[in-house]
Length: 338
Image (cartoon, rainbow, N blue to C red):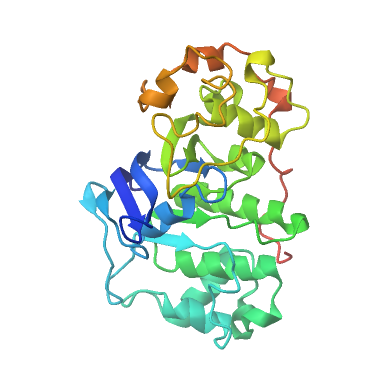
């Protein structure tokens, strides 16, 4: 097991005038053997953070550390690759011209078990028959392709796995089986995992810790039950309200702000970035000008939120556990379907 840590990580694209800071000073830790669920709207910077971790996107500032050491590209001849990533679209992440067995074998470090036997073991590990090694990605279903992508990632014998929206491109009917598989593999292999999704029900099902991202910054982070049942940031509450039609009305102080749109990431607002949309901020309470003037600092150790008025958010009504979106029903993860 290993710990993955982001320290003041910044990723910027483009020049000063027309550029955008996709990840802005993020501090986040994925503890050894734990699953951290990262949630937020599209464009919040989740995937950029993941790609920066594995070296696919250049880092502008800060560091990504694996067990206290900077991450970097590992040579193909290395005994293992401790940090691996599974992507959203399983078809685009696999070479359609290569049989799945060859694709997995390509990722196996040299010096290990015989490749044919290791490919068979990995296919069976993700719930596919060993004879699938000779098939091509186009002959498989979306769920089966994602299982192959998982097998390829596990071929490097990682300690940390990053899963980026790995069920969003799948049919609803197979999402649950893939999630069950991922969670079982994580526990069985004692992996640390950064699990990225916009779906709160999915994140609740797989995560020990939840981090909420908005416009390139982490606005709330804590144990999964604490974040979902006692959210401290108004953005987290709005995500929960959007995810569950059954969520009780949080009170007049937390009503949604009409016609509020996400801020332009090229020109983020000053102070708290969420304040132009915030249902407890200066749009509804004139005296809360601090939201416009000062950037909030996340306080606390176990559960922290970057909000000047977190106490007001937390005191405005706690969701009932039955109203928080639930994950999929548990099914057998090892079957070949999906």
